[in-house]
Image 1: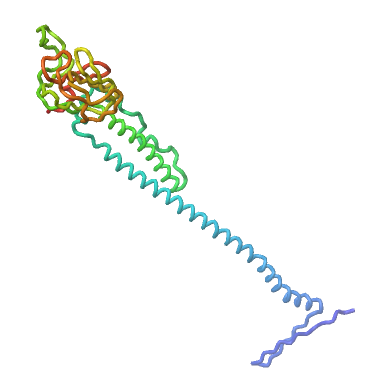
Image 2 (image 1 turned 180 degrees about the horizontal axis):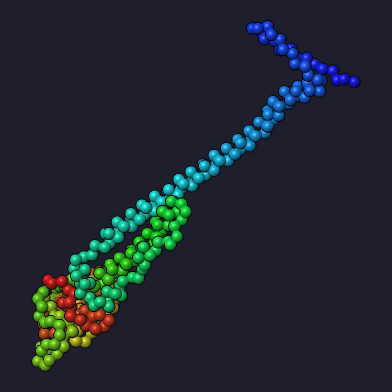
Length: 296
């Protein structure tokens, strides 16, 4: 049996022309289904895609927030490191200023003594990492970390230099006049040739005698020809002795600073009059104090 057909009339209002479109029933059903289902499918597809896109955008936004927060924290840490480095540089600059007299005395020390005070440490450039991190933050952190390590080494070196400066005799122990120098001389008691291991500084009895560098009092007691004598150990193998004192102002074991009074001029022991016998020893060997003392 022949399938029924359907006719669709399309009229033009302006011209009045009429067009006829004849379709079989099967064809008409397919066209109608297409017109109905295609928009529906498009709508269903859109309804499925939108939530996924929204979730993707939400996750991307959260990721950006986390990255921004991390960047803010990292920037804050870098700012703190930079501030710390600036403070350290200022401090080192202040510490590096040595007292002129102490600096001059250090320059006159034997080379081996100055070498002993130097701290070993790699240069800052050698501390830089061989491979750079992938990000700018990483590079800056690596650089600042290397600078901090370098500053630690430099600080240790400066502190060691300061310690050597504090331990180096650089001032006269009292105001007076030099009555006998270091080296071979004629003995004032029997006239024979004699080696004098220090300086004799004549002064009024009771005049205060001052430590010529920081240190620890090793002994403060009567010591044969030296009479009442004070021995101070300063570190780095340096020590000083003060003899013929009338009385003491310190005791053994006491920490002392440069310029503090340790005793008073006298004539105890083997002495012809009121004066101070002053010695500087390096590793137990007497040296000429004039090598280190600033001129009065």
